[in-house]
Image 1 (cartoon, helix red, strand yellow):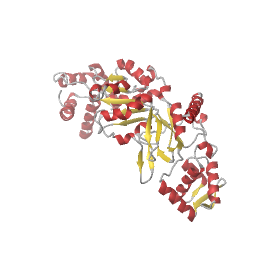
Image 2 (cartoon, rainbow, N blue to C red):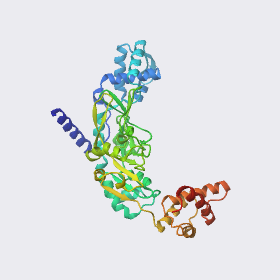
Image 3 (cartoon, helix red, strand yellow):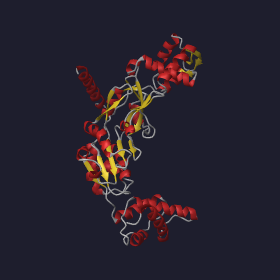
Image 4 (cartoon, rainbow, N blue to C red):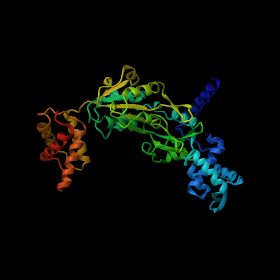
Length: 443
């Protein structure tokens, strides 16, 4: 217990020092000790790189494993002394080409058999934990201006701002519920923009002899460089990548396996779960209640992380590791939340926000917005005719998706018929007939 408390004290002091500056930035290590990795791990990465790619320059190896050249050069010198690698020729800038010896190839094969990971050197788990605390969304306090900027290109009822704003600032999660087609998923994806910052994430993690792949191009988008950040962080640790705050979106395909470390027994490589990849951003559970797992199963899995803001994952070695659970969790559903989960779960998601149908004035605005994006003139009288003939007589409910969807059908017809895209009653008659009859049905 004393050791655990000492570790926590060190972690708190490191976080405090990181937060005292403008932004978190991983500092370039000047020695193997500063990487938090042992000599053996770096040797393994270099040998496996040479086994897979063959003869390489020292600087090319350093670029691939994302470590400073001086560190890689020192390890290569040690491997050369042990006769695992040899110089295969001179290279520019006081460098050499390196290749494995026969004994080195045998050693590299043993390394690959033990773990097939080849790539950037991993970051110790504790360094990642510190980075999450330093970049937490809870440190942000987005106000009405940031929320308005985040949703500027979509239509949102201004009355929702007073509900959305506190929910976003809480970092405690929310339910967005209401009829399908009203933009719940679109709104949820915009919410991440309220935090308006980039973050640093590692390519991979290292804990208890296990490598965990973290970077996922499906969710982690490299952030564009800006001159100010480059000046402030010119010598950063290349094992880290600067990305936009992530929005991890999952729908009906979500299974319990996605929420645990996924271990490939053939390669002995682990992959981080979805909730871990969403740290410092948003995790959107779309169409909640329609997953292949029951809502109660998700409740049992996340009831502690949602309250304590940390999660426990099990490594292949059997060791439990504690990781941050630091993201805004958004459940988007077409169903009433109380129909899905019990009171204990609802208490841990304190904000339940209904996304209602638009009124006729907003419906007009949506058509005007999309008409301009489709490159055609907006004609209010045509939308009035659409409402009068196809909505009011059948008591059809207005949905935010309908403006976009109907205009898409009109554009498809105009493209087919080689006619200019425009808003005409006869075009809407054609679109309504095919769209509502087969997709939404008359209500």
